[in-house]
Each structure stands twice: as C-alpha cells, then as structure tokens.
Length: 430
Image 1: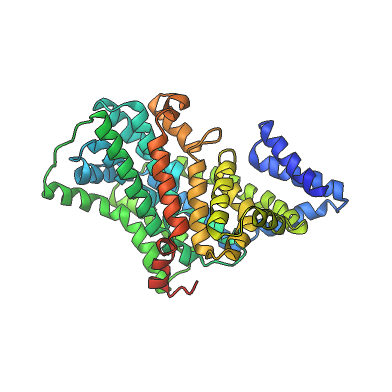
Image 2: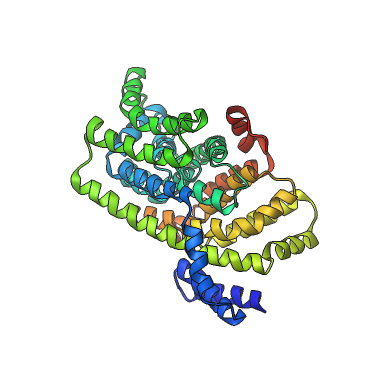
C-alpha cells in the first residue's frame, strides 16, 4: 500500500503541473506520514543527500559553463566549425552540429549549448535560406552532446546516484567516444535532410583560414584537455577539476579573449547560483525518494517484473531504454538520474551491463528527454530563438530522433563504445 501511495501521489502531482522537485518531496512526505515514520526522517535524508563533498563539482561545472556562455567563446567556435565543414551540402547545418559538439565540450550543458549556439546559428541559417524547423532541430539535437562531455555536471550526479559503484574519472573518459558517435549520427541526419530539401553548399575558405580560426578557438577548447589530463595523470581529482575549470574560464574570458564584461559575469554567476540551487533541491528530495524506494525494495520488484517479460539481456536493456525515455519526457534530467539509477542500475548489472556503460545509456536517454515535450527544455529554448512553435518542429523531427536512437543503440549493445577509453587511459577493470 505504501508503494502505491508513493507512486500515485508522485505522478498525481506531476499531472497537476507541480514542479518535479516539489512532486518528489511531497509524495515522499505523504508516504512517510502514512507509514507513521518520524518527520525528522525527511530532513535527515535531505541533509545526508546534499552533504557530500563530491557535489562541490556541480556548482563549479555549472559556473564554468555559464562563463563560457556569456564570455564570447561561442563566436570563435562557430567560425571554426563553419570553416571546417561549411562547404559541404547544407554546410551551415553541418557547421551547427560541429559547433554544438565543440561548445558542448566546454560548457557541459545541453541547455547552455542550445542557448549559445542557437542564438548565433539559428538566425544565421534562417538568413541563408534554411527552413526554421531544420535550423531548430539541428541545434537542439546536436546540443545534447554536452551531456556526455567531461564538463557535464550530470555525470557527477550519476556517479553519486550509483552509490559508489562507478568512478567519476572513468565516466569522464567513457563519455568521449559516445559523444563522437552522437555527433556523427547527427551529421548524417543533417546531411540527409539537407540533400532531400536541396540546401546549397558553402565555399571552402582555404586551409590558412581554417588554421587561423582553430588558433582563435583553441584556448576555449583546451578546457576539455586540461580536465582530462589532470584527472588521468592524478594531478587533481574530478571535484578539483571543476574548480580548475572555473579558474581557467575566468582567465580565458577576462584576460585572453577579453570578451567578458562585469554585467555578463554577474549574469553568469546569478544563473549558476539558480541552477545549483535547483539541482541541490532535487538531490535532497530525491534522497528521500531513494530511501523509500530502498525501504520498499522497488529495485527488486522492478527486476522481478522485467524477468517475467524476458530473461534475455538485450530485451531487458531495450525495456530499460523505453522506460527511461518515457520518464524523461516529463521529468528533469537530474531528477530522472537520481530516481531511476538506484532502480535500473542493479537490473542492468545483473543482465551483464557495466555501470559505466549504463551511465552513458542513462545520460543519452535523459538528453533525449530534454528534446521531447512536454518538458523538453532544449526544444523550448530552440523554438523560442527560432520563433517557431513546438508543433511545427515536431512534424519534421523524425530524422533527428532516428540519429539519437541510433547512437543510443550503439552505446547500449556495443560495450566498447563506453569502455574502451576508460580501459585504455585508466586501466579500468569493469
């Protein structure tokens, strides 16, 4: 009965339009009160969930991404991407994919990525004669690569939701190859649609111009190399790498590029504070939720239910993907990670999937949810920039969905995409 109350109240609050964090907290409170547990349990679980040293990486990575967004780094990355692939059919669409991938590497946030790249690329593509729905779909889908990059704070959230079963360093290394697979799938989709619609190709500016734009963008792109090198060499931990990222970004935007203004710095700080507060609130209330799910053995119940459908690992992985996708359509990315990891990670591990590989599966599924109504954050931002309705974009979204699902299938059923680099660079034994 307690489990029914937990589930019904949670989904009931979501249907009523209550924000996810409050829906999680209120459903946990209702269940605790019905169970007759002391109310102090609520605050104990919230504090224990948030009072973890590794969570210091979250505000630092968020702040670093906001500084990159407001510090003028995007323009240099866009120029590099346009010079590299702008001469191919549908060149601006291809440039958009590459630019979103590069900026996702330095921001680590799909929302920041679509905000920065969308503000530059969508108006530029519309001006060059590209359809608005194409410009928005390319931008919003390519920006999802940011969830897999070393600066992604969602990796930190997953590592802690996994209960110490996975190394943050291994996750950071594991995300690089899936991110490249996702970029290639998006390039194929963008090119295929461009050919079908007859979009023109741009002109190649010549290798000297490519090298000049690369030199201008390189200082911003170095943040990925600094984080990876520092963690893999043992110079600093994953948590310390986030602080290093902020320090480097401040030096870069103020003293190297000289594009950061005091007003933009304050806006970046304010947005980082707001985002961090939302994430920590989600972590606190999700810890209560996880406590109750552990108390009522939800993971065992879900595992038994799936085993009745099939005992084949490939089918179990497919079911997990479908469930995560459905949940991601109306839940925030962090909330989905925090709630679903304790449930589905043991099931996936029992079926033979490594926790690092499951982390990549989880992040891609959650990123897919960011671009799916009714809670598609990146899609809403892209549509707002493009001045087009979500319905109009959804009518032509299938090729880009297909690209994302193809990348998800590669990661789900080919472990090497997630595990090769951690094993090569870190001697990971998983």
